Length: 259
Image (cartoon, rainbow, N blue to C red):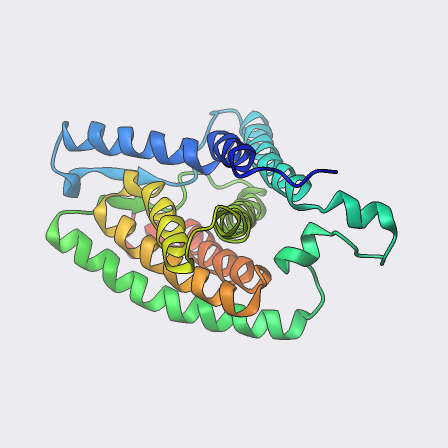
């Protein structure tokens, strides 16, 4: 099996991004321009988990389908990163595994959980300050983490949504892209910069404040990945941040006047 050329890898990266977060970034820029040409950003609203039907079980079906199909590019990335030569050689049970290569497994659950909790605290608290500053400066829309109606399945679906976002973003934007950028011959600072700018860009529909906050988060997460070579702590941290935001707003947002 031949080693893929840089040109082939570039096509591969464009395909993955075109099917996933690159597509989201393009839509995000268009949505930002749409909002800015309608009214000041401070008067805009961004709803993260929208209801897709007024009929309860059709809404549930749409939400589940969204989460399932959003994970397909992750499977594609896992396929691309799996070393078929090692896998066929039988040199080990996990030989060639993309899960092991990315650190996206349960090899060290306790340490990953502790690191994830620490990262969630490190990112989550400053994020609240950045959001407040962005609102005060008029560069951030009002963010509604959940627009779903209150059904029996609302909280589980929001948790599933948080897990989906965490897996898609950390596996693709950090683990996959840093691997491919390295094979392009890029320096690590350049690879981290591009990865973090992409992370910020697909949040632009929320305004410039979330763009800055997520870009900084991208730098921190990517730097940590270069030290640990494990995306699992990043997935845990990201999932915790989104679960607190999504579920917390769904249960308490309107009660405390956030909606």
